[in-house]
Amino acid sequence: MSALSFRLGAREGFLSFLPMSVGLIPWALVMGMAMISAGFTPLQAMGMNLIVFAGTAQLGTLPLIVAGVPLWLIVVTALALNLRFVIFSAAIAQGFRGIGAPLRWYSGHLLTDGVFACCFEKMLKVDDPHWRLGYYLAPSVWSWLLWQVFALIGVFAAGSIPKHWSLEFMATIALLVLLIPLAKQRPMLVAAISSGATAVVLRGMPLRLGLIVAIVVGIGAGFAAEHWSKKEEAA
Amino acid sequence: MSADATLWLTFVLIGLATTLPRASFIVLGGRVRLPSVVQRALRYAPAAALAAIVVPDVLVVGGDFVPLNPKLAGVIAAVAAALLSRNPWLPFIAGMAVLLGMRALSGG
Image (cartoon, chains in turn orange, yellow):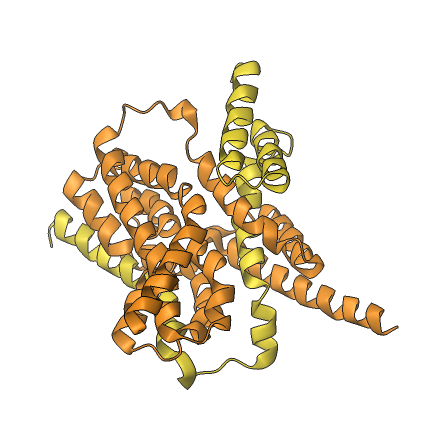
């Protein structure tokens, strides 16, 4: 029974994430090429890709590694780039009730923006832990495979794909497609606009801390918008 | 320590700085509960984070705020495609086509 519900969950999670996952392909290709152009050997590049598994943290720390910045600053930068995952982790944590610690660690390691945005609502609603685990792991492992395979292709294709194709734009489109259904609710739209505007204004902040401030501002604005719309309904 | 060993140590530390924030609450689970106000506020986290990543990506070119650029046109096309059609691939096709078309037209 449990294997069946795991498979059913895996199927649904995989199918709902599949269209979004194309956005990972150019991102991984770019990552592979960037690591080679930073001077890594193919072994070092794939080592980083396997150990870190995070587009933003990898791309963000790469220039610092190249510049020979002190190790502690590289680690602090990586933490700042990943702070949003503490928020995501807390938001989706209830979706892992009834699941053992080793699988939680593994699931945590695989947590990405795309899978979080795609899966977190159903993870909280569905009761069956086997179904939830399948529903989460299928798109996560799929993301991991795409990330490793296409980074490897990028490592070996470095230099032969014309840069002016701007394939990385597909990653931007993928994130937007995830944002659209969320932004159909008014307070969510307010949160998105406030956060986006703040991120633009604070783009010069060191260590990309502006990203964290923007997320906090967006959450606050969404919360305030929800509060006001309830008041209007009451009046 | 050799340069190669330092690099691998750097990878491991960046890996920890990635996996620990991600696993934090997933692993702690029921032992640590966030207050309900915080949980309600967290519903806005995904929209806020996605916008914080995407908006500067589209409107900032080389560190400067440049709202009217080919990427914005590509984004408008992609959003229109996502709103008007149920085909999941169309936003990517429309967005890339408009971006590359605009670049070709402007000679960039």
